[in-house]
Length: 270
Image (cartoon, rainbow, N blue to C red; front, side, top):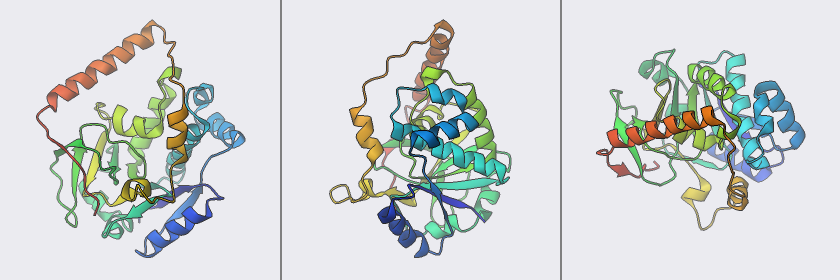
């Protein structure tokens, strides 16, 4: 069975009622994970899991708490020796067939080798992105594609244990100036990497309320508000880090060139 976790503030009663309604109506089992929100919680988590992250001063407290909430659940996946874990934020709406994907992991076992490091993005933000067809069978009229361009947001995804092991090692060797919000890391910076596969489910089976109902959303994102107020970060990289960053930039350029003939499309929600 796939274990699903919802990142949510312990005090977010309206959001939690929304999640109860969404998941229980489709008989999808889930557990809440109390989101990291205070400086004390953040310091405890970073000290235990990612000490260098405590020195990052260019992300907001909300962004850092979100980042470490996801990292904490990744570590939970390793601690419990789960082959995969489903992670969601507490403002999502679920599609018609979400239960087919979130109540069992037989389709994951069928489509992916147990040791493949992969992330499957389950949501859409209704922004054009590039996806490439893969030799995976369709499952309940949903197809798994390789994600070839940025598609931000961490409203819902499945990540394998192998991907978590690789990612934690990658983050522990990341330069202080190279940390980003968690969605930028996962669904932009990881795309050019050859040691981890980032996929997109099409149609998507979940969507954040602010995307689905932008004019009447009652579950707005505080993190997005904080992002809009941030001052731009000025990097102080040394020469080796500058070289590494330039190599990464060139990789992205090469990938864009390789994928230039792939049309952009908006992933539907169903």
